[in-house]
Image (cartoon, rainbow over all chains, first blue to last red; front, side, top):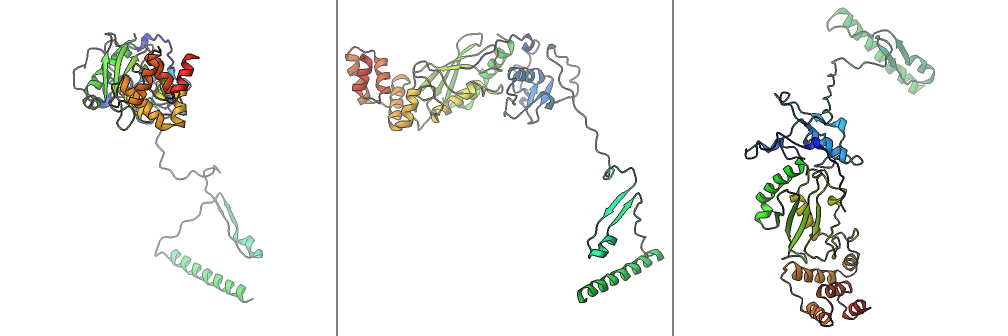
Amino acid sequence: MASSKNESEPSSSKAGVSGEGDDKKEDRTFECNICLDTAKDAVVSMCGHLFCWPCLHQWLETRLSRQVCPVCKAAISKDKVIPLYGRGSTNQQDPREKVPPRPAGQRTEPESGSNFPGFGFGDNGFHMSFGIGAFPFGFFTSTFNFGDVRPNAAPLGTPQHMEEQFLSKIFLWLAFLFIAWLLLA
Amino acid sequence: MANIAAQRIKREFKEVIKSEEVAKCAIKLELVNDSFTELKGEIAGPPDTPYEGGNFVLEIKVPETYPFNPPKVRFVTKIWHPNISSVTGAICLDILKDQWAAAMTLRTVLLSLQALLSAAEPDDPQDAVVAKQYKENLEMFESTARHWTNIYAGGPDLNKDFNDKIRKLVEMGVEEHQARVALSSYNWDLERATEQLFS
């Protein structure tokens, strides 16, 4: 048969709540899923269900071996509930004091806009490039650049840019010739 | 009684009264005492089951630790079902034990029990005799359950054959319910039931 633990927890008494809002048409969206009253010291689980913190705490205490959401039975834990701070809610002091304080909200700093931080070789750029080539030339295609920043391409239209274009074309033709020689030889 | 339990039952009670299931006469909830510790529930036998047409009364006891612990529920109306004791009315249902969750309400409990009547779990039985019959002779189980519904829950299907057999045993001096249990347990085999009763 169902188990019934004899916990006498005066903390669960809800003095001050009774009487108010009994006939009021309240917005039921913000009712605690355990006491069915408007949530006090509201917390929300990762699965999105709203509870009073004292209610949820007592639920977690009752079922130490099986910590699940009372609504959807998703895994739940004290560290993973988020308190809800509504405007003006701080002034309404709740009389239930024996309950441990509601967990604090966790604030994660936003990610800064900087680029990929690298592998930690100091602040300088670290570049490494590999190429595949025929055996004796393969050594030349691997280059390791420690510490020096790669130069950016020169702006369009400048003599330096023209020169780079010219050079790259020469190298391209050289490469073609080289491949052709390899194939023919 | 802890205030939170009474508070919640009060709210739930209002909710059940207003619910559409009550409007459809599928479930009913009544207070037994003023302290909200004991209630009387009633569920209608679901259609297309042997329980159709019957009304089943439940005893609901609300523990002080409610809603952190489940309410204690038991069938007052005698019923022939694999997960409900034909002797005590004790119910084998996971949500009334370890699968209870604090957000469940008396309304969901009553609806779950109604669902249990539609879908028995013979592999997790409360009444081994009933469960055995359910697994070995489903037709026999269904007519027995229908007969019990007729006798104890006001169901419409009268089974003349079963009633005749019971009358024979009653004439031999056996108490009626005892005769019904013996016959139900032995697939309405009058000889074996008599044997068991007088051995």
